[in-house]
Structures are given as C-alpha cells and as structure tokens.
Image (cartoon, rainbow, N blue to C red; front, side, top):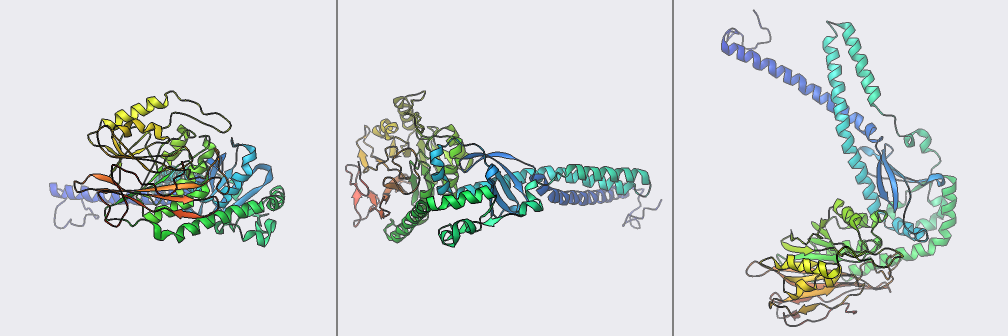
Length: 545
C-alpha cells in the first residue's frame, strides 16, 4: 500500500512500528493545522461580529447625576439623549471607533441644584467622559467573547460544508444554508441611532451661544453638536442667564491652577526613599478641585492618594460623578485609598472600589508603598436636608474597636485615617499610631503632638475641606477656604517608617493659593530646617481652629 503523503516512505516501511508512528504523527499534524486555520477564521469572524454584538448591549449606569442607560454605537460619538428636548454629541476616541449612546434617566439630586451641577460637569467633564469610555470598553470585551464563540461555530459549519462539497452536494448546500442562517440570525440589527438619518440635523454649539461664548468653553468640548429644536432653544435662552456664573467659575479655578504652579518652588524637596501621601477630605461633590489634587500629586511625585470621606453630599448613586472625577484625576498615583465620612455610604464605598481605590474602612492594616495604614468608617450618616443620624454603633464603640485593632500590633501603625479625629483619639492616646489625619470640621487645625500612655510620639492633624464647602454641597467658586495636605514618610536607621514631613496647601475664597512652609520631624530634619520633636508642636500653614 502506497502512502503518498508520507515523506519518509522510501526510508522507513509503513508496516513497521516506526512507520506507523510517523504516519500517525503526520496525520495529527495535518489535522492540527486544519484546526488552527479554522480557529483563526473563527477568530477573524468574531472580530467582525464583535462591534455589531456590542451595539446591542445596554448597561444601567450613573452619568452626570442621572441613572442612565448606556449602549455602544458605531458612530464614534458620545451622544447624550435628553428625552423630548433633543440630543448633544461629542466625538470621542474609543476602541474600534465605537461610540456611546446615553439615555438620561431620573436623578435624586435637588432640582434647584441641577443647573449648577450641569454647569460644573460641563466645565470639568473628564471624569464622566472617561467613565463612558470605560463602560463601552467593558461592553466590547463582553461582546468579543460572544462574537468569538459565534465566529467559531460559523467557521466550523462552513468548513464542514466545504468538506462535503465534492462527495455530498446536497449535504453541502444544507450546511451552507445553515451557516448563512447562523450568520444572519446571530448578526443583531444596528442601533437605530447610527442610521444615516441620525447624522442629519446636528448643529455646532457656537450657533446657540455665539463665537464669543465659545471662547469660554473647554477645548475638549469645543466640537459639541446639538440636535433638536427644543434643546437648541433652551441652550440659547439659558446661556445669557448662566454666562456670568459660567465664566466666573472657569476663571476662578483656572486662577487656582496658575497660582499653585507659580508656588511650585515652595514644595518640600523629596528625599531619597521618601514616600509621600496626598490627602483630600470633604470634597462634597466639588469636582472642580480635583485638578488641584492632580497638580499636587505631580508636584510631589506622590505614591499614595487618600480620601478621608464626604466626597459626596448624600451618599447616593447619582453622585457617582464625584468619584468618577476623582478617580480620573488621581489615576497617575500608584496607590489610592478611601474611608467613609458621615455624608458617604456603602454605595459610595462600592463606587470607589470599582474605580480602583483600596477600602481602608476595615480596621485592618493595609500596606501601600511600604506604609502600614489603618482606618475605619464614620458610623453616622447625613444627607441633604436631614440631620445627622447615628448608625448601628456609636462613635465611642467604633473608636474602641479601632484602638483594639491598632494596639494589637507589635509596632505602631504608620498612618491612621478617619473622617472625624474622635474615632482615632483612643488609639492615638495609647501610642498605637504615628500619625492620624482626619477632616469633617471643614476647618484646618495645627498639627498636635499627643502625649501617649506608652511614651511613643503620636501626631494628630485635622485638615480642612478640599471642596471649599460651607454646607453639604459645593458648586462653583469656593464657599470657604479649601485645604489639601501632604505627608512624607521615611525609613529610619532601623528600617522602620517614620513621619518625616507635613505640608499644607491652602486655597482661599479670594482665588489665591498659599503653599505653607513644610514641617519636618526629627530624626530626619537637618540643622537648617525647622523641626518638631516628640515633645513639642510648631503650627504651620492654615491654623484656623
């Protein structure tokens, strides 16, 4: 028997055991090669099908303070549908040129606050645009798996039809028909927002607010287009009413950015091996200050960013824009963590975790960049228009639990993070933490060295409101002076991390910025630097009580 496909048939007889082995190996290789080609064809078909599959997905997400429905499109735009009013769109850069169609739903935010919220979101839209892109990317990844499976099934069916073509024509035709039915049945109809009719009727924003108004629009939103007579008329009528407030808000925060950069020379120089932490607290939805947080991260080359609570005003899901903004602006920091304030909730915490922040509410030590950090959530809850409510546990109970957790360790915690300093007080008095940082009172205090029961030095500082919030919500220019804090840690001669430096960054309602003199703590201070020993405290920066 002649085996024409056997390349070594003249050297080894197929009837021998070796010949049978070689024949089996070559047949297996041929089958494997055919399977690879089929897999490749299926993968290619899957890639073709993936965008169409993705456009049929819908996700209920938070966008711009509204519970919204987001679905991918193929037009490369972020389109916001505002019901009967009309639509606005902006070209965005996403994988495979996909866009996002956002159908705005209800919101729990106070109606009287919505104009100011929209104004702020329009001025500082990075967080929401990034969030929409991430949703589309997630939907595309999910679609790729579905499309890959469909592509593989289609490729297998077509391959089976080709194999039967010469010997069984009728079976081949049936298989081909099945393949076509699979392809057509599996291919979902395109999103109606992508039809040619959807491209008609769009007008540039400049036609509603004029070229002078466009001078104040952020550069990334300059290409915005509007569709719908009612929405165009509403924008044209609203612009004169909100123009001044819009311009004031934009110029105010642009001034803070410029002022902060002009004082960069006052930033404490970094030391080799130093770890820096940037703290924000009580933002209360003021996403405008997130650009300043990002600046300070860059100026300090900070490894860690910590939020000490009250990032929202009521802790509801419609305030997701606040977390989206902070997450976008702090993405260059290697490590991020948060603790809950009395205006936050489990919803807030979940949003932070989803955005990549470490949950520090567990009363368990976490290690970030070599620092041991421990924190707990504020047990109370506050909401707009409501008095603060006590939780299942009292403040003293939670403080006692935190003390027990911190003091059960052989070494003091490097950093204790809470929203209200009262939660950290028992642990600090017991010398179980080197530094505690808190917020809550919307007013910065001087750092205080605490006399501890075990003789270990402990430093406590309460920072001000990063959002410049006087009440529980903050829109527009600062209502009160704002504050961001930076701490530096270094390892001592024994390799143990110690507090090295504190520096306060202060932003005033006048629009000015002041970077306070850094405070250095022994044993790291040089002879030319002002120092704080364990026995004394020297106030610096914003010392408002």
